[in-house]
Amino acid sequence: MARLVVLGGGVAGHTAATFAADWLGKDHEVVVVTPNSKWNWIPSNIWVGVGEMSKEEVTFDLAPVYEKAGITYKQAKAVSLNPEGSSKRSKPFVTIEYTGQGKAGHTDEIEYDYLINATGPKLNFGATPGLGDANGLGEFTVSVCTADHAEHASHELQKVMDKMRKGQRQKILIGTGHGMCTCQGAAFEYIFNVEHEIRKAGLRDMADIQWISNEAFMGDFGMGGLHMNVGGYVVSSRIFTESLFAERGVNYITGAHVNKVEKGKVSYELLDGSMGEESFDFSMLIPPFAGVGLKAYNKTGDDITDTVFAPNGFMKVDADYTPKAYEEWKATDWPRTYQNPTYKNLFAAGIAFAPPHIISKPAKSPNGTVINPTPPRTGMPSGIIGKAVAHSICDLIKKGPEAHLHEASMAEMGAACVASAGKGWLDGQAAAMTVYPVVPDYDKYPGTGRDTDYTFGEIGLAGHWIKHILHYLFMYKAKLKPFWKVIPE
Image (cartoon, rainbow, N blue to C red; front, side, top):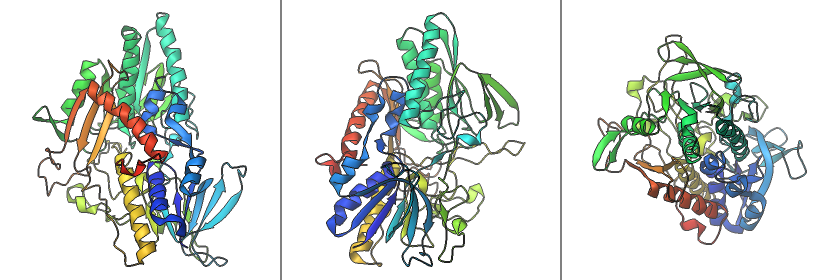
């Protein structure tokens, strides 16, 4: 019997574990290690953050789902890897520390034949002074990164709206809280949902709403921007995005590194090296991401973390990490199988793999401050990669070490995104966009880097209906309800 250990129960880890358990059956064991007791459909946290959904509507208990699937569940966080075993253990193992199941604080060592690192990111609030504590519940700002964060954000937003009702004008500031953030999309959705709720309450004239982002230009989204087919015309994401902000009366600051958060005020540095300040009464700023801090040791106990992980804490995979000038970056630099080059039974999926380079053009201020988005690897790509990695491992277990590895390069992968711009069956809106490929390939698609026949965007009420349906569809799939496997990632 082989044992597959999956670290993380988010989109990538949950997808990998559930498919692997289904494909391997009872002849082999699948173990999931995740510090959370609940699964969270993160894209809907923005609706929790404005009071349009409850925390309970976007989460469910993992234990009964994993029991039904025959998956061994450990509510714990991974601490370190020993991919060569140790002087006491011949097999590779992972050290975990329990966070629940009545064992909180206790440690254990779990041997494995194969391991998938799908730990996702550490929400690095500490990278910006004042942005938030380790739990993300900052004294000055809010977050929508988890369901608990989003619930807190909703309560704080209601306080601000109550002040508007009493005739007090309020300043709203939403965006990214560091020069190297990713997930601009989550902030993008949240600012428009906040604007929608304020407008719906008849309070729009009492709110000044401001966007602040590390993107060099509007619509970059960590993908270097894109050209899309809109109504039969090819337009840039910059024009598309700027028009949405203009229509809603939302101002914006781009190319900004927020370097300090204080009560009612952020300080920032711009790409031109100038410094600025922005006041607020309510602020939601996305933190930067980092690896969760896993360590690695060889058989003799020497630290080999730098061998297994990149400096940012994400796991090295089959990517080309050779330092290159921006002009030399290629789509082929990106990983295909997500297998660690040193230890062939280690794989990474979702945010946990180290990208070879950013997608947007790198940028620094004259002061040497890096201000550019890091690559998005969430949502649809995470699910696709998780499934491909699980498929590879199942084949390796069943067919042997020479089995074909399945591939899911982001440079050959399309992705669909439905970004909410306000919830409501009759007045809701969402921007529905597809991108192909996610990582631009300028050799194959000169000029734009993407196929404009398959990269398009529209905004409207139908998009909102689609996003609402997708919420229930993916919650249904994650709970392993009948026919869950036919629902695509």
